[in-house]
Amino acid sequence: MGINYSAVCPKPELTYGIPRHTDPNAITVLLQDTLVTGLQVLKDGKWVAIKPCPNAFVINIGDQLDVVTNGEYKSVWHRVVVNSEKPRMSIATFLCPCNDSMLSAPNELIKDGSIPVYRNFTYAEYYKKFWSGNLDEKHCTEFFKN
Ligand SMILES: O=C(O)CCC(=O)C(=O)O
Ligand SMILES: [Fe+2]
Image 1: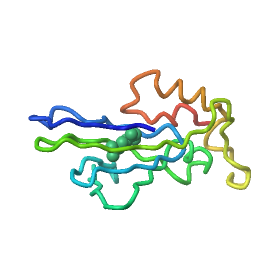
Image 2: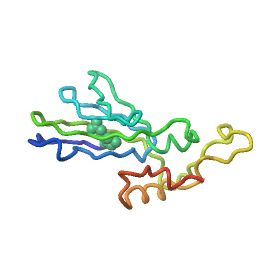
Image 3: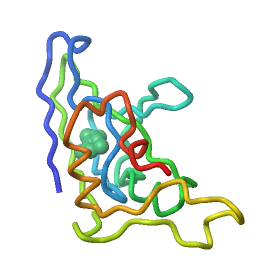
């Protein structure tokens, strides 16, 4: 679980609460601050603000759901922007595979005659790669494609 806090920032255009990323885990359950919009997702090349919805969770598809669905469910780029008037808090719960789980798509999702989109790997290997470098331009799943 992670608790994210973005302080008030007088120059919000200069920084982010959380820079763009995809979640390395399988599924993220997010409890948003109901008073401040901050989460944005990249859709068709544009950043779209996700308005907080009271009494609801935001469910985010992470990289491992992308992998085990053979790329049918895409993990989404998202980021958190800061606000010049109000601080913002969110609580994220991450559903993660065990470190030594082997990630692969089931045969039923591999089209006849084609190879899986991703090679097999352990979550430990993926997680190490995720934190190993500057992944804000390239999607981490790209490194695991067949
Ligand atoms: O604060 C949010 O709405 C998103 C947090 C987030 O992306 C994360 O914790 O991975
Ligand atoms: Fe995230």
